[in-house]
Amino acid sequence: MSPDITLADAITALVAEKRAVGYKYSAEAKVLARFEAFCRTEFPGPGTVTQVSVEAWVASARRRKVTPATLQGLAAPVRELARWLGRRGVFAQTDRCCYCSEVPFRHLVMPVLFRMIYACGLRASEARLLRPDDVDIDAGVLQVRDAKGGKDRQVPVSESLRVRLADYQAQLAGRSDWDWFFPGRAGEPLTLGNTEKNFRRFLWQARISHGGRGRGPRVHDLRHTFAVNNLRSWFAHGQDVGALLPVLQTYMGHSSLADTGYYLHLTAESYPDITARVEQATGDVVPPITAGPRDGH
Image (cartoon, rainbow, N blue to C red; front, side, top):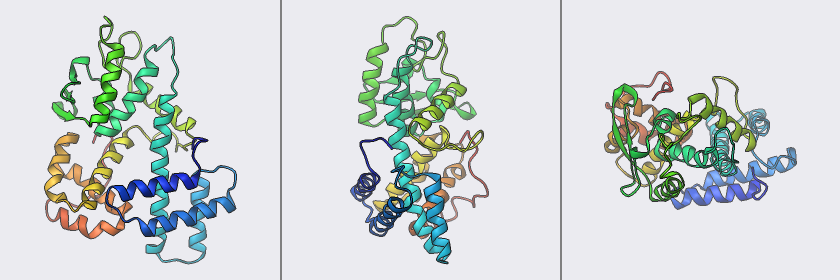
């Protein structure tokens, strides 16, 4: 967590954000207040959510022999707080990225690249392989070409992201060597390895633990977060999620509704209060999920 925000401040901001989009978030706010008091007593130093503090929080609940449902209710808000802090921390660190002579545009690329992946739910390669002409600043639309399955699609962006893209484009436009929207070394696009390496560096700078090779958080998890956040927002506003699911499928470039349906189940696992609505929304449209989505989803 950055020094300008305490754990209590972060909880206040998260609760305000949830309520602003329609969640009551009363029970969760009480759990988070208890978690903050627990951390103040047991872990007075870090002032943030760590793997150790979360494990201690869960262990404490288990020692009290709480029911599985109660344990889920104690863990889910803390998990969401960690995600909120992760998004805030990672993006703040990308903004502090410095100029590098070997990759001269890195300090410009990183703040925009990871925000685009998160805000548009893109696969990492879809973002890094964009050409300058694929980004229509005036219309606020990305043209994703030859994505998974050889498919093209258009992806509208939010106004705040469009403004950021316009500022980024203004700094690179007119350069003869600007062949890729996110240039890497020697006129080539960023590699997947370089993208993941930078993401891990920003995680480390934001004091977010990484599970090691093959484990998360990964760049692709930003895409997962995009999907789950959209579904939660639709549920919170009482929208017809069953009807909107094909919209999310098209936006994310999924070949089948089952791929998109995975996120419904993931949303239900993270937010058990909407489980019944998830089941109602899916009906017979989305088959049961037996495994998580592959990295390309």
